[in-house]
Length: 217
Image (cartoon, rainbow, N blue to C red; front, side):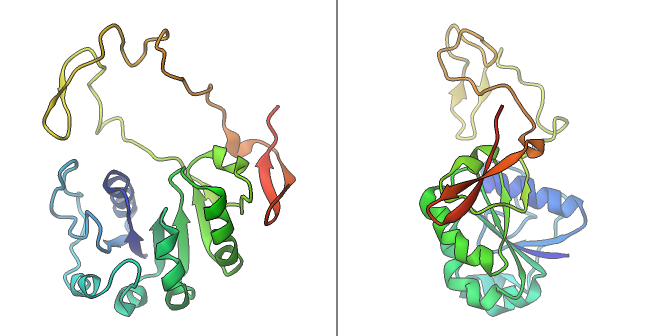
């Protein structure tokens, strides 16, 4: 499958383009940090086994993510848009005959949900990041909930007990008197994990009509 990927976050782009590539898909990240995935970025290495699409790069430069070149759309089977709805709005008429996926990063809002509604009715697929998005007023639904992932075999070994280098190159040390697992930390801790993907849901009214929210017992 050919995936046109529109990214606003280089780290998530690395993770998802890597995953799609490992699954055997062809991925082109138009104007993204990994438009050429054979090169490393400032914070991540190159993407293993990913292909550089020399025939598509000129089209990416001739357009923008707000005005995609038709050649990029024609090439793709699926278009994945990360977070930025303003990349969907001006391109919708050109790409609505493709499978278009809006990928949430957990920072949606009432305004975003209201803007998504019309595209949802037109066939837009929605992949959520967080079950907390179910509680947003005017929530327009989802086709899947997929958390961000990390491969423990790839990112492991540091437990906070030693100094480490940050991506900018400046030293980063643990805060005095705390470790990441310190139960007395004054930082707000997230609630215990629950698999909300299997939780029952009820219908509640939203400003754009019926919206879905989870039932939490």
